[in-house]
Length: 365
Image (cartoon, rainbow, N blue to C red; front, side, top):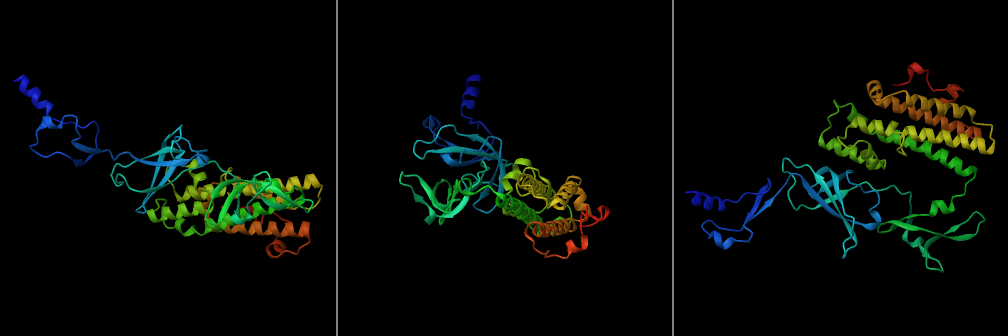
């Protein structure tokens, strides 16, 4: 009896893991001894699912195990997972590195073998977009562009290619090699950060109705819109570094307004604009602009003293409108103080030299 039971047990096939049988290559009644050492079935483990990509060596920097990655299936569905493996050696044939992203798939919605596109955070690199026709080679064989130097003569500026597009190239080296550091450069920085702050408020204001539509549990279509909003501000991967879990409208709004490290957040732009103005006045001993420095400092204090929950409770649109008006007055005063231009807005004339634009109790919170 024991021998018969042992023989029966030998005919039982047990899977080494839980999964789905996708193919059976044997038939009922086929002699078992003829299957020794042969494949009898294919078992697929669907949870977790792995998205496997090959990454070029020049894009490997910044990809780390544990970082969040987004996977877009060929069906249009989006999934978010964690990078679980980054190869340390390159493929001998393609010189690329294998990267694996682990995706939760408890409901088995993601089928095995489906085509997908993976977006992963890389190390940020300041780059300049130029036409392909602008690239040339020097007499020594270095790749670069021709630029007009500070002495009004043409010079060769070496560059490194970061990204290759169909009609354009993203390169590094141009800004560092051609931007002359004088008063104009500080005014450029000042104007750039004020413009960035203004554009961020306007971009966020376009999604204001979604934040007032009832609750923070956004539908799938709304999540896609917030993804698009972050990408429009070049902030999707930066946001994911701070919030690797659930994406909510409140988190997105707070990130774009208050994050102290994101280059396009309103808070960082106001801080950098204040620093640029202080450096400009100190380095070149400019007497004008004291009221503007005071205004930027007070705007920074306003941003530091409020949370995103307080602003949403008081009205996001009203607060963004307040910020835009404040930045318009700052721009008008900069133009009048340093370039002799008359203010284009009426708000400066109405507020005089008083900061902020409204008494503190009336500022939207």
